[in-house]
Image (cartoon, rainbow, N blue to C red; front, top):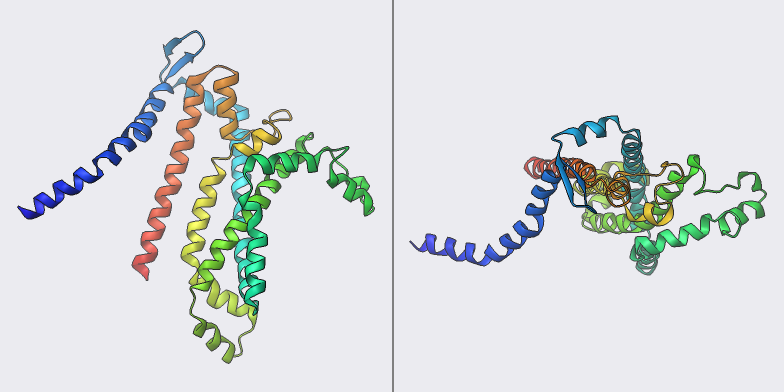
Length: 295
């Protein structure tokens, strides 16, 4: 009887949170799936049930597949820099003997992460500006003027330029998380490795990397998930141009719904993004649980 009472009391405590989550998370998700089966003109209010036609259109939409490819490219580059690159940098910082230098470097690398994506996008928009931006002037100053570009105005360089800004903004945050994970490694392990004559590279590969693998797995999943939800930086810097070369799924969703007035098709894109991120989240939970069981 007492156990039943405690369970009822627990449910009473969490009931408000469950109601809020249901109303503001799960209900909109269900509604979005329903909207994806409609041809919906939001300005006139006209709705027509089209079943799975919006999903069939996705398969034949070259811009959608181009945006999906940009998201994949974004994910791959983010893993290289924000996971493996950040791990190497964190290990280098934590290998410095001076605590003052370690704290200073952590702060320096974290500062870009404290800047909002919108502000960072506007900053790099100015840096990339072909006539007044400092990037082209710097190239010219060091004798590399032949590499001058309209970085955001050419299809070949626009997406790499946007991704570069994003890596600069998020790199420090990943580095700080890896630094915290490295600090949790017992110093005795590094001491024992040093006594055995192990060099810094082997200490990194044989001590640091294995003992931060849980954080590495978590950061990999979070980075991939974030790569498929990119929106702000692209909208601020290019709005998907030139010629849709920097469209990602988030911006193509926005353009389909709010510019082309096809909310049913936009809802289908949103549903696909949800399915992808849900799959990544489930993989993350499985990976974390498996690691805990293995340990």
